[in-house]
Length: 186
Image: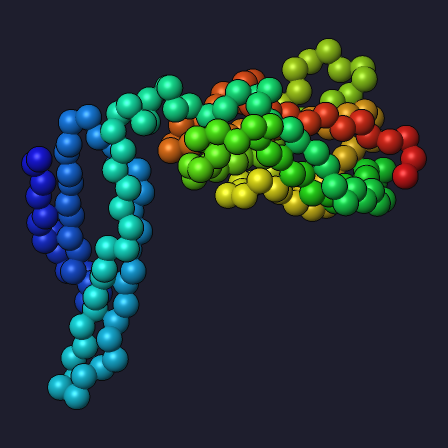
């Protein structure tokens, strides 16, 4: 296993260290470190310490496509706490919570999943492909939509939850989604 650590310089009192690890057949997926500075010693200097707190190394087998995120039809997405209000210049504002879960418990359920949430605003008269707008990310199976501006003429909203697992993201078109009709009045 080749590795190296070299001191590359000193900036603003920090020692800059650079390292690399190469292991055929393995992927380094997570590193967690705790860094702290001890209280100043009586000699006038103090030490800065860093402790490796967590490291995760996976084989190619566990990071391959056989361990890709679950398919879109494996999820159920629902909306909760829906509140519509008037916005400026004929727009409406939407506040709500999106929540999703896998229909069945699988080995994927125990992995660290990340979710990116997008919205597509659709009109009745538009024949064009609507653009997905990124709303944010979540590390839990819920996302709060806050003050989403919905222009006049939008008839439906499609929320897309892109699932990522170990850095492998679903294509947006293969991601679970939730369609919500925009009410005429609220």
